[in-house]
Length: 139
Image (cartoon, rainbow, N blue to C red):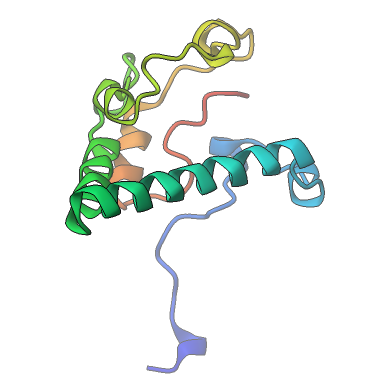
């Protein structure tokens, strides 16, 4: 079949009724220089830690840790009222010990423009039946 005559059956990616109107500002403005420096330093620190673990315990240990991290990052609750906490991932990576501003400030559920999560759409996105963010929580 000719590719020009195929019909796309999937839903629209830019559905303004479900996901809100797309803003151009996020496409134009780059991230802050300190944010990019912080992320690169964090990646460099993780790389050094993996090299130290490989030299100490062998090459398979960092691969096993990466596999465990991937498994723990995929473990989630179904979309709904109770959000996933990723407690296993936080304890595995060591971020459970530190308290960041996101732990006590800027809770999206406290916002005035918070919209309840659509459980049906979240499961459609998770199963691959629909496109877009799994839970558009702001208007």
